[in-house]
Amino acid sequence: MSNWRGISLWMDGVGEITPRPALGGDVSADIAIIGAGYTGLWTAYYLKTRAPGLNIVVVEAETAGFGASGRNGGWVMGAVLGEERVVGHLPEPRRRESWDLLHGIPDEVGRVVREEGIGCDFRKGGTLYCAARYPEQETRLRGWLKDLYAEGQSEADAHWLSAAELTQELRMPGALGAVYTPHCATIQPAKLARGLAEAVERLGVKIYEQSRVTQWQPGEIRTAEGRMKADWVVPAVEGYAGSLPPLGDYQLPVQSMLIATEPLPEDVWAGIGLSRGQSFSEFSRQVTYGQRTADNRLAFGARGGYRFGGKLRNDFTLTEAEEGLRRYLLGEIFPQLKGVRITHRWGGNLGMSRRFHPHMLLDSKNRIAISGGYGGEGVGASNLGGRTLADLILGQESVETRQPWVIRDKEMKDALRRWEPEPLRWLGYNAIVNSFGLEDRVLANPRSGSWRRRMAQALAARMLGLMRG
Figure 1: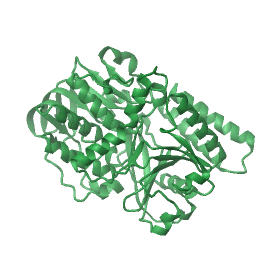
Figure 2: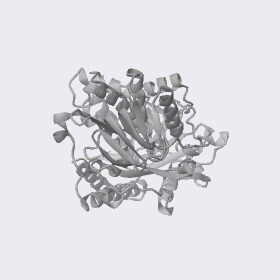
Figure 3: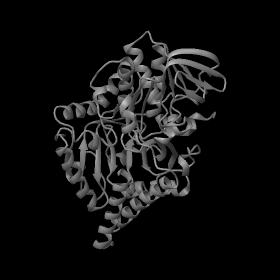
Figure 4: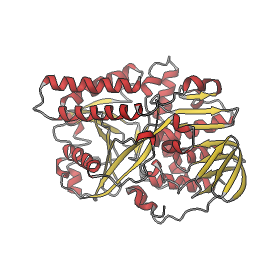
């Protein structure tokens, strides 16, 4: 692929892209990392800063930042998918230790960005989860906040904003309030990925691009033109796990899609807010997300997309329906943007594990280390994954390696779970997504009767329970 800049708003903003040379011939390394996205680059960074003598080589099928790392919504979350199920039940003081580790992710990313001089528009403004379109969102949000406190979080971690307080941060007509958490930063994600690649190169890591791995096994990887022997292999491929069997049995690719407006004038932003790098979401199950970019665009996305058999999606030219859903949701939240010009439309593959929380895995016998299954929350989680894999590979015990998502050797059989065979996956996914869409349409319609509203919510909740079961 030659038009790498055209794959997202973010890659369009990184300047000219010249691919690094491809892997050719036979080479050797202490550690071979497959994938120059966030997970691979963070792993290389922490390994090399902690053990400078290591010979680390990264191979990338396209160019650094080509996958989800250059296509995401730009949220560095102090969280991981499913955290409430894996952290909330821990005894103290382990639970507080885990919350502090997660909440510290944005600050750690910010530290590295500053020290390495990576210009990626890093702004730690927190996140606003808003009851924006119907009263059931407020009920659900208040229940979620109550659960967060029951799981050991405090008002410093998340607190309620009244409708009036929310207007100081973000103005949505008819909004009923929001949950605010300070533990999130926004970035220009492609600039972070490209900057990390340059940082690890300065440390002595070798990166080969346009080097798609065609075969891998313990101690060896192969591309069309080369072969690498390595003591450790780190497949850091997230949504592309299906390209490296048998990883695809445990980590499915699903898609998320975004649109971005033209740069908006200051008078429009004065009516919206988001003046200090906040991210936002309106609290529907369709998982919307957005941020104000450094050049004053509004980047906005929503989840949705799975291909039968877990096949990768390579063409992210959004269909009329895909763009239309995101335009509709954007216009419902910000009516003044209903006719705004959309300049960029894109999407990406993300990895979803069957247990709906990430895994950071060490197989010491085969000398393989894996971090993935981020479920769309990987911008921050990949940093934690890189730190964790570095400590696991180096044999160092740390707060990172003590976490419940860390899986080692004998634990793997019980801790990892395969996805169901087709057509169960495809049928289940579509049933869940359609129930979420139905719920949203019913609840957003003020003429919907109370019986219909209760039934739509019950169906969506039941589908969500089945998904996690």
